Amino acid sequence: MPWVDKELCIGCGICVDECPVDAVSLVDEKAEIDQFVCVRCGKCHPICPEDAVIHDSKRIPLDVEENVERAKQGIAYYSDEENQQKSVQRWINWFTCQTKIAEQTIAQLEAMKKA
Ligand code: SF4
Ligand code: SF4
Image 1 (cartoon, protein in one colour):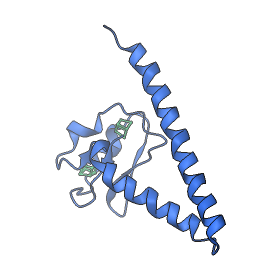
Image 2 (image 1 turned 30 degrees about the vertical axis):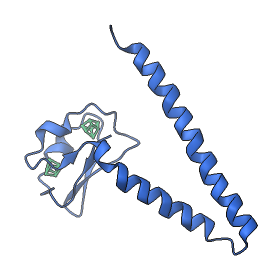
Image 3 (image 1 turned 120 degrees about the vertical axis):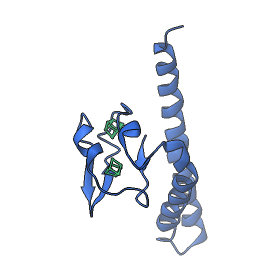
C-alpha cells in the first residue's frame, strides 16, 4: 500500500489526476491516499516528481507504533488489572485474526501467479 511522505510532497496534484480510482486527494496541499479505496495499481509511485509516494514496507515501524498506541488507549479505559489484561488479549486476538486473514490472502494471491 503506497503512502505519501508529507515532508516531500509539494502538492502538485499529479497523483490525484492519475489515480484511476480517485484514492488520492489533497488535504492542506498535501496528497493523502485513502487506503480503503486504493487498488495498489502502483501508478502513483513513478509519476511523483518528488519521490514522495513511498512503499508501505517503509511504514512498518510507524504502523507498529500506531497500533501499540491505539491498544494503549483502549487498555487505559480500565483501571483494574483484570480488565486491562482482558483488553490486551483482545488486541492480541485482533492482530492474530488479521495475521490469519493476511496469510490466507497471500496464499490465494500466490496461487494466481504464473509459474
Ligand atoms: S505527485 Fe507527489 S508531490 Fe505531487 S501531490 Fe502527489 S505525492 Fe505530492
Ligand atoms: S497505487 Fe494506484 S490506486 Fe493506489 S493511490 Fe496509487 S494510483 Fe491510486
